[in-house]
Image (cartoon, rainbow, N blue to C red; front, side, top):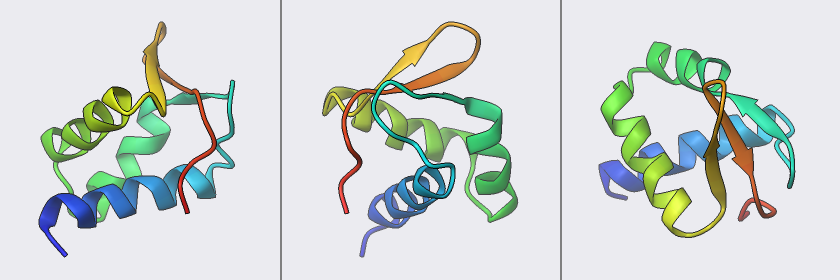
Amino acid sequence: MSKFEEIEAAVLERLRTMKAAPEVRINLLDLGVPLNAAGYSQEEIMDVLLALEQEKLVAFAAGNRLLILKDLPQ
């Protein structure tokens, strides 16, 4: 598993823990702080979020939030 895949798995797991579902807005701080504490940098997390945005799974929203657009992959 590459470092990117590891971070992607951690981001998706955190989103699942937060009960992310379509049309739900997630505070980016609530997502990022625990991932930072787990040893992932802000840049690494943003790289994964940008990839998820390109896949149309999420969108960045006003107020430092992330809008979930589709069900998260298992």
